[in-house]
Amino acid sequence: MKSSFDKSQLSPNDITLGIIGGGQLGKMIGIEAKRMSLNLAYLDPDKTCPASTIADKLFVSDYKDEKSILDLAQESASPPLSYCAKYDSEQVETEEISKIKRNSSSRI
Image (tube, rainbow, N blue to C red; front, side, top):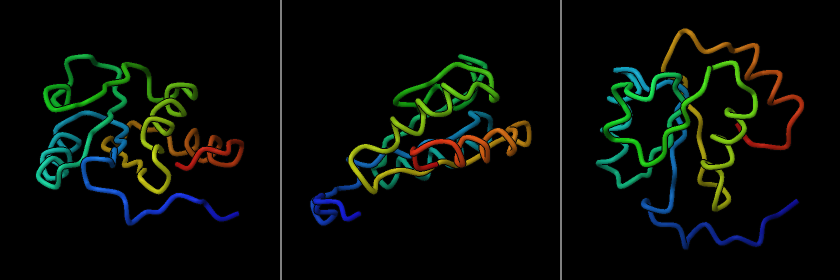
């Protein structure tokens, strides 16, 4: 199914990078993304995680919370083609992510 969205109309500040985990690695990724004018959405169980200082949006939730992961994916998926999810932490359950990818229309 083709999208009628013209990706040539995107500018970097239209793009939101979704990152699961707001630790030091997530913050370093975010600092580089900010240099490229990207918006940042993080999911982390700690509202004072290191990346909270640079986050445009922070979802405070457990890494296993499927709804929060889907909310992060949705935040990072508008407009079309401007999404990404990166795992910052070894605590992220890849089994949970795989299950959500199989059972959801969201692009993770």
